[in-house]
Image (cartoon, rainbow, N blue to C red):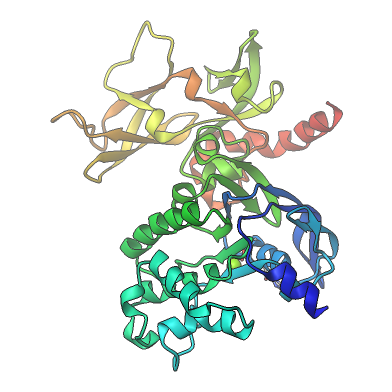
Length: 404
Ligand SMILES: Nc1ncnc2c1ncn2[C@@H]1O[C@H](COP(=O)(O)OP(=O)(O)O)[C@@H](O)[C@H]1O
Ligand SMILES: [Mg+2]
């Protein structure tokens, strides 16, 4: 047993693939992870993004071997590790609490695990790891003499020094202030590309996930709702949860009234909203469509003769200036409150609360969702007008989806 353990754990030269195959974790009376499938290629920076309580930490604990799945398999580097102990897995974890030994120097902290495993050159390897996080100059200090950001980097060095095939990071930057967090995000990303290990990073911060990861999986209630490159997820969310959790979205619900070979038209309050078929998850029946606030343009007069989708007139109810852009809320009858981000590229002409405006966007920026906003959730208050349709039509749609 001990032999397997040291050989498996050894020094991975590169990252390994991680696969979760149909993994579930049920606690008494509660399903924390529900039939999870996940494939993370070796050497990638993968982020698991989701709100508090969605099952992120449980997923990491399952991968680390600190928790046993109720069902399913976990493979690291193609090897089934489901029934192995945490010591037998080539995995290290970095947490938010750094848990450095206060009586040891920084170098001793980083070398500790290596020494315990009687690895030759422990000190040399620890120094290299400290170099990597640019802390060689504080090697002889004690943890209490370092700032929070520095301590976090030591914790990272202590994990990376083991060359784990897979490094798990559970909201590691959560305790740092915003500015330091942004800086550490870029550093972590650099370190990951330098060492080439597989990073599985867990966060509830969408900006953090988008900045750092090659691939982001959005998790909701123990399931993955959507997975992909950050830009792809942002430009083409497929569920109302992803549309609202990753950035902001304007969502409208209506019937598909018409379709062509490449587009469909969704009728909302008498306006035909055109959506490309390849940007829509559902092509008939009641559909929720969306458009991101920065894709919407504000007009003083009704724009004519363009092939843009135009709604309005509506009334500006709020305008908040933030330097680079202004965020407007426009109440449009039949559409609810629509959010618009306008870049401050022109001088002077800003709309003010009370102004009457029209809104437009290019059909290729619209997207069609698989489901409908959850009207009971406070997140979708903007959608009350069209949202009321949803409750009645939801079951019908689900039945249709099952049929097809
Ligand atoms: N040991 C446990 N017993 C019962 N419920 C648990 C246990 N661990 C976690 N949970 C529940 O599982 C859900 C997911 O928890 P967690 O994975 O910690 O979420 P996250 O890290 O995404 O915030 C939560 O509702 C939590 O209360
Ligand atoms: Mg957690």
